[in-house]
Image 1 (tube, one colour):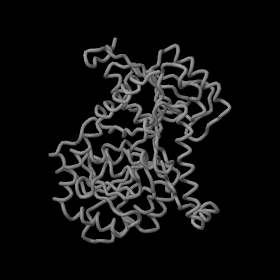
Image 2 (cartoon, one colour):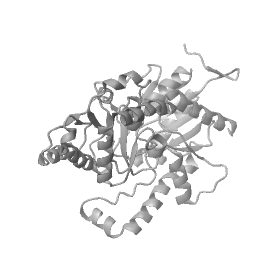
Image 3 (cartoon, helix red, strand yellow):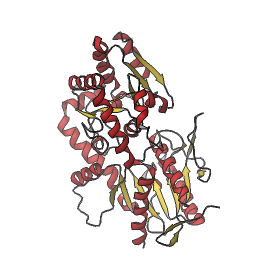
Image 4 (spheres, one colour):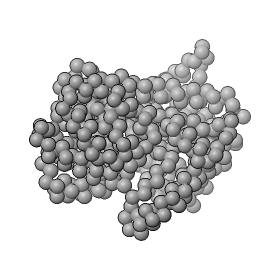
Length: 406
């Protein structure tokens, strides 16, 4: 039997339920939930997960057996679709679950607002809703008629996109006690776009925890291979991996760097397109590894490449720093600056500056002392994202909500 946590000489028992669509494995949201749930269990809290669809892989991450997983049956809601006619059924199930299990806090990771309406204020339960992505992603690129209209009507499209992004948050506020962004920069962006001036703010920011419990030992940096690594889902509209491949072409064309290799880890709908592009460009030192546990690749690689158009809080950057891999990143999303300080623990290149990106990677490849200095600083800076520190932030949030309990 697990003992409840002692805080300030008082025993605090917390019953916490995460709300997800899939469990246990799909992407970053589920991975974050597993990390948080495991740490919360260590602190003696009761943790459960309500979800709709089973989604498993052969190499499941370690989940504490005390985490209770409950599938709500016959709900068609997954990573792609939501049936809003199911809302009444889901809400009814949730209300019953709250009452039967005396739930203190609901952490809504992925449920639509229609599924949590009518909960706030009816029970002692407090609801926290999380945004697991960037607030505003204009994405001017595109194909077909949508891409054409975006480019021809850029100002109007951006105005609409800001309004739409704000509505995605605003519609939750009457139904949640706290709305959490991944970065203070996203929170401030919403406040600016929505002209939000509530002094008793429902808004807050908590970053994701790092996945691996420990960082690489400094002495192991000496065993790094001359490898550049990219880890991510193979989706061009977000990851822009065609840019990474074109950057790599410039590296391969430099005879000074013929000992370096490029490995791409991940799967997704655009993987075949990337392989074809690499073949068309005649690239010889690039490999597509598919879906793999990335940790062994992090341990080998020396430089991490990211060319994304947007991210929420990219865990791959923190994972890279944990493993002594120096990130080189395009300045295309706000939360990047929470993780990488250019010239200290990585390199930030102006968005879309492929020439500048190539130059920075070449500088790292040819300057071993610089590369090792940035890697060493990354080992230290990533500690602020350890799961213990992040759950401390969550505990502080819970305490604040408890103090304001109706």
